[in-house]
Image 1 (spheres, rainbow, N blue to C red):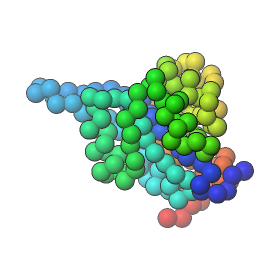
Image 2 (image 1 turned 90 degrees about the vertical axis):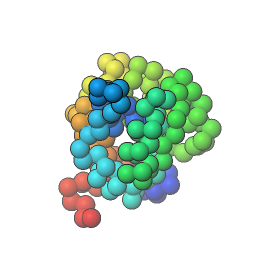
Image 3 (image 1 turned 60 degrees about the vertical axis):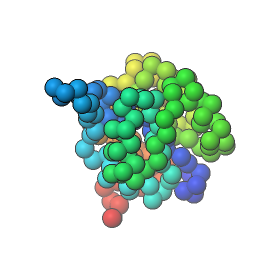
Image 4 (image 1 turned 60 degrees about the horizontal axis):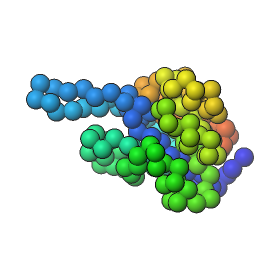
Length: 165
């Protein structure tokens, strides 16, 4: 069991994990994303135990994600295309132990290289087969909160519901 905060990095792909991955557009064409309940609270608790960052490959919706993740939640967000993620992770984090949470069809390439993998229930079917943990929740519907609870239990021997704020 890892106990040092600096040993682990929780890296989360935004679209399809923290958000539903869908766009909603109004009559004027303004785009919106749906972000799930409880994820922010669970992430703030987990932040006390480990470093957390977000990545997104969505250029067009990046400002929406930035507003939510950086401005409202206080976490770091980086734009990284799906095809460049492995190189980016290896360069940025070197030998850190990465717990990666994602949902897409290319994320299996990253899952095979990281320390531990988590995906939402509605992820790509192959990803679900190779993931170390599959959330009971869908992306944008408490999947990240469920992943946080799982990490606390598995890596820190903490029961989420017994943690005092």
